[in-house]
Length: 195
Image 1 (cartoon, rainbow, N blue to C red):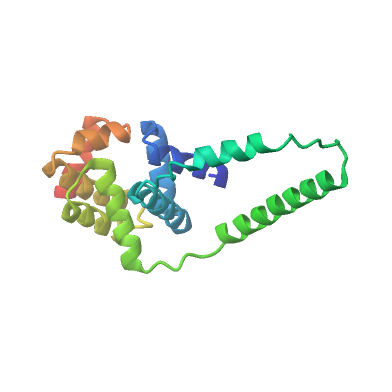
Image 2 (image 1 turned 180 degrees about the horizontal axis):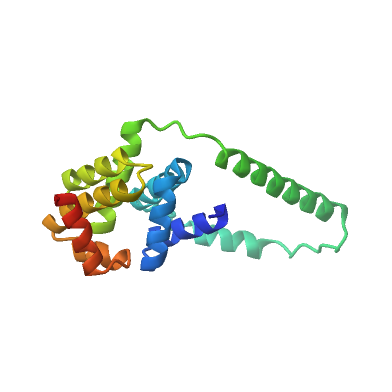
């Protein structure tokens, strides 16, 4: 998955707009790619930080002050290629280029999150996605963390264990719907985990 597609899917996840196929694709990618998981968790942290911010009120006299300044002087006359305009355009281009380099540099930095921070971020993602109790979500995250590269039957057993927990929490249908999983497939995985 390329970076643009990944970022689009994470943003759609945050906005609650992912289709079940997209959710499964994103979940599969972050399960196999720790760097992508760290980026996803960072974006969720930023989103929660914005949600937690208190709204700021502008002073009531601000609108009047702006109107007074606009109406106080004549409109400036700007010639298309005036030296001041060229300087402003050059400054704007420089700002955009610097911001681009800064964004590229910051996006390629390794995260310094500790394993417990990563675990707590994953727990919060499960809590948000399925309205789970934190203890239940933590149990799911620990199961998934214990089998990050599992393939074949081991991966299916780990999935089945997660499904058992979700079924006990009454969230199996929501998980199946979000991940486009049939009831028969869910039952098969649960039996495999119980076996």
